[in-house]
Length: 312
Image 1 (cartoon, rainbow, N blue to C red):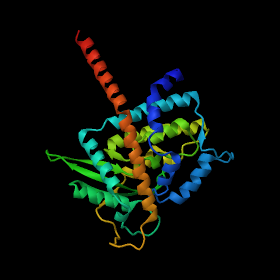
Image 2 (image 1 turned 90 degrees about the vertical axis):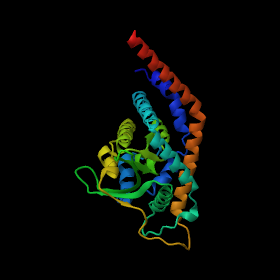
Image 3 (image 1 turned 30 degrees about the vertical axis):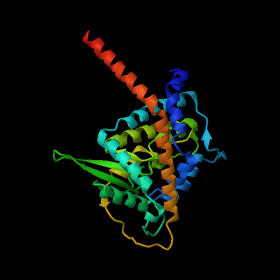
Image 4 (image 1 turned 30 degrees about the horizontal axis):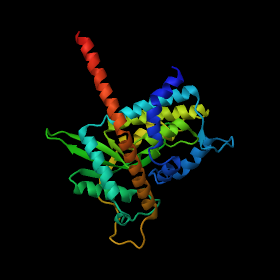
């Protein structure tokens, strides 16, 4: 495929990605609080393996023609996944976005030892969701290393949607979604894909797997252009382990006080960064809504045309 065609196909999408709020520097600041047991060591290992010993510490690299086309194709997939939410998911996402924006620094009253991992933000959000009638909880998952997959742990939120027919569906909420896919020396188009991901993921495990598969392929393509392998902690198996491993649901933190001598500064920075990214994401979607509406109209007309041809 001519890469000029790829560029034309992905032009609007990539412009949306650029405006998605916060570059890698800002996202990296969020990712610094990722709740993974190997975090400190992984950062050093990642820097060594991904950046390498070439002495080139440039944050971005240029795309090759074939690599750019691959990433544009994956960008289209991700754009489709973002639009594939059902009504319950869309409503829940709107509620989550609104509630997260309403959280204030003074609401973060969680006291935990060790490195901040944004638990106070998650428990604050879960409290508001439960007050809004949702069966929400903070989930703490943990898994052992196996083969090339390192062991680790992760913390996220889930909501159980109890349906009228007696069945239920578990939806995942990850408030720091982009940090799971950061890589060193990413090519520019990968950075655009990263910034086009939802700031907060809300959806099923099945839908989550679509995002993971696309981002692992995109990361592999980006690293391949710099002659670097995909690190184990960016593999599909490792990423899936975060949400598919055994977990415990919790509604309240282990330690909590009503008055703190000082606010948890790391969580406050994380909260403000998330809120800023959310505002940027909402603004970008508002600006591009007419374009998306026109694209949807054209798709409906195209489907109608093909349906008419089949009946003739």
